[in-house]
Image (cartoon, rainbow, N blue to C red; front, side, top):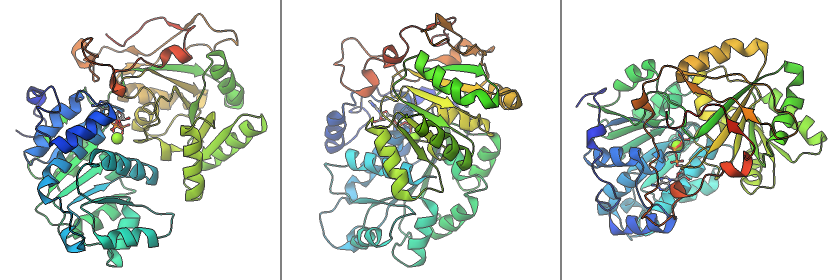
Length: 449
Ligand SMILES: Nc1ncnc2c1ncn2[C@@H]1O[C@H](COP(=O)(O)OP(=O)(O)OP(=O)(O)O)[C@@H](O)[C@H]1O
Ligand SMILES: [Mg+2]
């Protein structure tokens, strides 16, 4: 099968057991409350187990991490060793992510999934001391999760050897292959054996990436769970037209009127994030700020505070747009629209994850109209502009309406729970929507269109 060929027919297994995973892995999944695989997991896991290179696309929050991590762990079960000798623990799987926070999160998932196996893993990323990471690398690890720059630092000082890597994963692959990361990525690829299995995962891929990726994939398959570049199905998308100077008040009004407990608020620049964050703090709102110029300890503290619910608003640049899984986050706000349309899909995908509903509010100034046009085109949906809600709970709000999209492409990415199954996993729980949107009745719902 070639790139572009539909792999949906391969979605035959319906349980993790049928996917042929080891009992140790199945036990870990049970403990995490995963009872059925998601569509991307059903499709990708058999192909990875069969040794194929993949370009895999599935919407945000639909379990891509497990879709690559589980089959890799399965393939490494045979190498699991309790030996303390570092030589028995060469790096066999390398997972690269674009941000430090995402690397930490992916590694945490690997640790969870592999907790019953004697496989070692660690994570290396910049902005923190190298010493602790060096100690882990010296002991030997089978699975290494890394951001590119720090990985090259360790490779340069001979702390890590990558000559035995059998599996390479680029999470957020389209981002990893863009101009900002390409030079580092090329240097990393030069350190890896050419005979290896390479897996690219993202919620978005554009055509230029497809061409580029083919040059270092071998006979790859393309797995597409939904139509290309589809935004998460369970995110209600609202657009308010607001003058630039009125945005701060509009933000407060939009979240107050809907009684939103927490929101991740995106700006385009670090300066804008700092400015907005400070203004919100002055208004007495518990606000964290996260962007690339902050010290790593501050970045982690801001994210942790937000995850623990101590912070109501987290103002962020696109550093927080990709991959982060903030459990039950009810709302994302685009205080400024992103320049790159794909970033919109990733930003709003921080809510509406694992079967939960979410709300994405975009505050669009007249100067940003052209960005909105590009986003509409990218996601192939109309985004209807609607007035800001009054401070009293509003009667109605407009939502995204599909623009001439065939019904078939809206096939649910997250399977609806089977009423006979126990409701344990996150993908099977009640939506959080009720919490934040009781008064809002969408004019037109596209969720099941
Ligand atoms: N089979 C499953 N059953 C229940 N929960 C699951 C299952 N698979 C994944 N999850 C949970 O779903 C959430 C989203 O998973 P994950 O972060 O891998 O999504 P993703 O597809 O990588 O999203 P993004 O495109 O934003 O990176 C996580 O909290 C994860 O634990
Ligand atoms: Mg992900």
